[in-house]
Length: 217
Image (cartoon, rainbow, N blue to C red; front, side, top):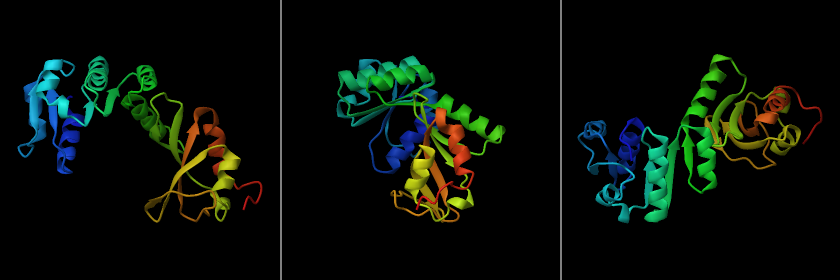
């Protein structure tokens, strides 16, 4: 639901990998974003209307994405898709992070775009040493990329986690992502991506940016 930039891109990409797609928008002119090669159904109507959803094939849907420009429309249509029609995979885009947290508790996955975008801009504008790659809808946990002091080279991932109280989500090594174990040795050039909470973010930045106090092998 929603044929803006996000919705049209989702529709095209889903179709590209072999899925049948229906897209809903109140404005028929929005469908021009899909391009002439789009073969899916284009349904004009209100996305949370049962009639509109039926015309879009909700009874056959395996997934539903609500990505219109309105929080209320997105969450209502997502709930209808999940609770009335039993769609297995439902996600809603939410601009208000407080609402996103509530709906996550109701079991509806959300993507809160504004907080992540603002934090990303702030990191770049203010020259933060760590770069935030992702933040959960409640705003409590973020995924950050941190520079690693050369003193950590040759130490194990578990030593870094123990010292920082953060969790290593993944490493980028020689341009390729990898999932480390606790015994993975940190190497020169590794880009370290950590899961942190705001209350430890500053301490994590200080710890990763200085040599370890103990050997920690």
